[in-house]
Picture (spheres, rainbow, N blue to C red):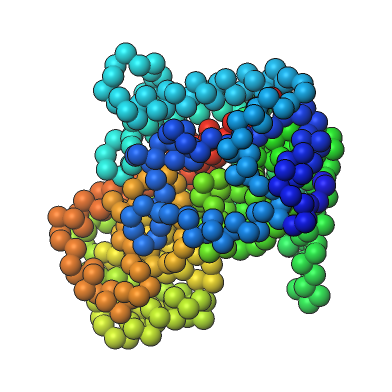
Amino acid sequence: MRRYTRKHHSSLILLAVISIAVASAIVLFKVSKGLSWHYLASPWTWTSTLGGPFSSRHAIDKRKEKAKEYINLERIWNDESVKRRGKHRDGSLEMVEADLAKARALIRDASLNPSNSSTWELPDSDYVPQGDIYRNPHAFHRSYLLMEKMFKIFVYEEGEPPLFHYGSCKDIYSMEGLFISFTEQDTRYRTWDPNEAHVYFLPFSVVMILEHLFDPIIRDKAVMERTVVDYVGIISNKYPFWNRSIGVDHFMLSCHDWGPRATWYVKELYYNSIRVLCNANTSEYFNPKKDASFPEINLVTGEITNLTAHLPPSNRSILAFFAGNLYHGKIRALVFKHWKGKDNDIQIYEKLPVGVSYSEMMKKSRFCLCPSGHEVASPRIVEAIYAECVPVIISQNYVLPFSDVLRWESFSIQVAVSEIANLKNILMGISEERYDRMVENVKKVQKHFLVNDPPKRYDVFNMIIHSVWLRRLNVRIYS
C-alpha cells in the first residue's frame, strides 16, 4: 500500500487515494442529520466506565494531528463534490448501499415511532427486546432483525492456519478464536460472493501470531508488523474492495492486549477500518465512532455448558468480593490498599484459601468487583453476569461492550477510581428496591453474553456481529 507523509498537503493526499482505488470509488462519511456515527444518538449513545453518555472528544483530539499525517478525513466528510469524482460506476456497490439506506430509514422510524403499526415489520417469535436494559429496545429490535435479513460478511480465504482462520477457544482470549471459528462456519451472514458483501473480515489471530512467531527472549515485535502488512498487501492486490473503500468496510477482531498494536502498521486499518477489540481503551485511540468493543470471556477449559448460576439475593451474605493478582495494574493496587483485610463486608483476596471456590464466592456475593488490570477489559464483568452478581466496574477510559445498545447503568455499578476509598458507602447506599431491580436486569442481560455452539439469536456472537453492522450503517461508500 502506498505510504503517506506529513509533508503532503491534504488535497494531494486525497488525489493519491483516488489514484489507488481500483474502482475509483470514494468513501463519504455522513456525520450529521441523524445518520452519523450517532445516527440514533438520541436513544443510542456510548457509555464510559464513569457513567453517563460517553464522549470520545478527548481521544479524537489526541488523534487529530496524527490523522493529518495520513489522510484528512474531515476534508472528505465535508466535500460533497467527492461523490462525483469517480470514473466508473460500481453496480454491486450501489445495490449494497441502497440496502443500507433502506435499513437506516427503517431503524430511524422504529426509534422515532415505536408504536406505529403501519411501519414495515419483521416477525420475531423468539425474543422481543424490552425493558430498561436497552437504550432503545424498538430501534435495537428493528436493527437486529434487519441485520439477520440483510447483513452479509465476506471472509477472505487467503492465509493458512494457525495464524489465519483459527484461534484458541479457551482461556482469557477465547472469544477471539470462537468468533473466527463461528464466522468460518456461519451460514446466515457469511457470503461467498464478495460483490454482495457489506463488510470484509480479515481473519488473522493476534493470539496465534504471537504464540507461533513471537520469541519471548528475542521479543521481536516486527513479526506482527510483517504478518499484518503482508496480509493486507495480498488481499488489496488480489481484490478491489480494500482500495475501493480505503479499508472502511473491513474489520478485524482481537481480544489480545496487543490487538490495537496489530493495527498500527497499516494506517488504513488503524484510522479507517472497524477494529473489534476487547481492549477498548480511548486513551489508546480506541474510537467508538468506528471501532467496536466486545467482552472478554475466560473459558478456562473451553467448555461453554453450565456457565450461569442461580442463587436468590437473600442467600448472598457477602457485600462485595474480588480475587485476583495484586500486581496487575494500578487500579487493583488501590483496591487492595483500601480494602484487603480492612472490612469483612468487602472480601478481597490475592489467592483464595484452599477449599474456597471462586465461582461459589461470586454466587454468595451481592456485588462483584471488576477492576481493570494492565488493560481496561476484565473477564470478571461477564463472570459476574453469569453468577447473577451485580458487576462493580472500576476502570478508566473503557468503552463497555455493546454500550450503543445496552444501558449498563441498569445492571451494573460504575465506580470512579477516585472513589475506591468510598466503595462501601456507595454500595451500602443502594436501596434494596434498586438492587433487586438490578439483579433482575443482570438475569435479562445474560442472554447477550452467553456463548453458544452453534450460536443462538441475540447471544454474544450475534451481538458482536450487530456491533459491526451498526458501524457499517454509519458509512456510505459512493461509486
